[in-house]
Length: 188
Length: 145
Image (cartoon, rainbow over all chains, first blue to last red; front, top):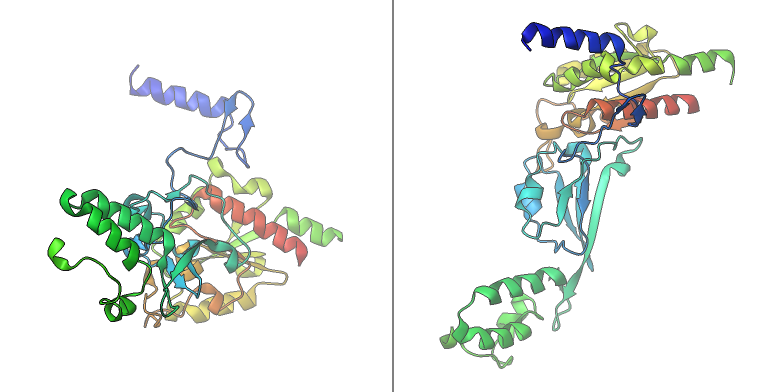
């Protein structure tokens, strides 16, 4: 079929069938209409089990959409939809694949507060001074990652040391370095 | 609800105020008015006079030179009126906002600094269906007023 035939077919289709899409997306006699496209980029969604609060999504965001708020016990990762341009870089660069853009598009709201999507994590407390450190999950995950790549000869030593080190903040680690009874640098 | 209010809900007319956007949101608004996403099924029509309109549709980050015009348009529209901020720029200045909290020298801030906004439609640009969803919200907001 040539170009003219296609055009004729299109004209006949437009004259006989209704072009308007149903709202909210549903079925029209003889045809199905759905607004939701697989792979379309829309509302954000956190996988709360996977997210470690590492802030790599914040660093990569071109519009400064994602902000990280550290309050005493909690670290909150919050996405403000109003400023987002749905480029999906946070989804591609997340090391844990925790943040995702779902194809859902209906996020118009009557108030500004309804445009925030939040995920909060618990932070670890320093054993000595009581100040708050990184989220507990992030420290655990970082340790796992380093242990997987460290040399086999020092892996056991490294495992023992990090167990002690990660309970303290960086200042207390320097102060109590002599007391903590860990292996010295020569092993590494 | 008297007859006047009821008839207003079935034909809310739109005035489109373009305030310094990149034209992308405006293209999507044009798509909403076209037959595929037909907004006229809820009685909405585009009017080019704010005195005839019930809903003001703002796109763009509102630069300083167009802020007084937006204010005047808001005053010209008869009560009750609803303001829709369409697109990331109108909601929160989008990519033009600075990250360090200082003000951009060219902008008079997002729309809700200048006039009260009732419905926020985020997206860069928002999908036509998303604007349609916002329009339905705006009509329900108009019913409350």
